[in-house]
Image (tube, rainbow, N blue to C red; front, side):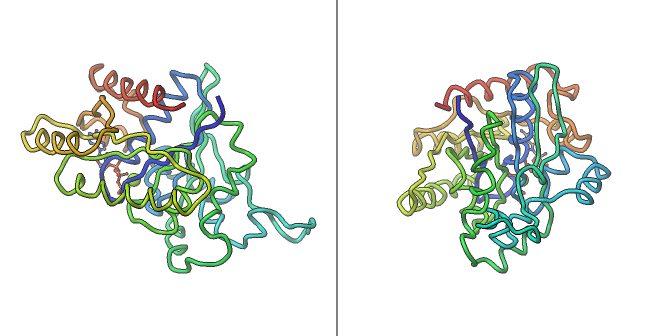
Length: 277
Ligand SMILES: Nc1ncnc2c1ncn2[C@@H]1O[C@H](COP(=O)(O)OP(=O)(O)OP(=O)(O)O)[C@@H](O)[C@H]1O
Ligand SMILES: [Mg+2]
């Protein structure tokens, strides 16, 4: 299978994007022996803090690059046309660290983020600003089975970078009325992107997250099912083990959550894999 690049995207905040990225990466690497690259493309840097301790993050910052560096001079990102020793080029290799490695050969590589990424939004513009992530992944991504991009919740030039670089978009939805209402807008943005760009991105599906038994949750889900066909059959259930694990740099699989919750997430992972062609 060739590398698949998937953006985990929703313009609504707090719907489970980062939690899904982290746990999906863990399950694919540990149980399916996959080589997974995760990119923290959110200035909040939540994914970075979920996978690295503070000390590990600080050590990385001293020696290596972070994702915001891809928005420096374009020549540094794609390399000078004629070699120029004064230009220190920015490549995937000098941005990644490897927070998890498993016996079966699977691993998680991470490109961390930092708040500085938000300044890209202020000076949006410049040459090929929407294609930087694509350039960085272009030649190197084939060493991975999956590239998962944890997107920030606001629509910006960062989102465009994710769409240009991705094969698929996974849309997590927390079944409350406000989150569900954002879906048509997001689908319209993806449609507009596809009309304007050669590289098409496909919607892998909508996945409900933080699902509880509350009555309003059922009615929101029913509404989404009525209006959208591409919804995952597996719903990721609500459990405090996700946030608790996160604070200890743990996936749900490393917490003492009941097997039921771990199996629930694994069902989602299986469905995720069957949808990727
Ligand atoms: N299935 C779940 N059950 C319980 N809590 C969850 C679940 N998924 C995520 N959470 C918690 O909900 C909060 C928001 O989740 P998360 O940060 O993954 O959302 P997000 O969409 O990435 O947010 P943002 O838009 O701010 O980046 C976090 O505290 C997280 O631990
Ligand atoms: Mg997030």
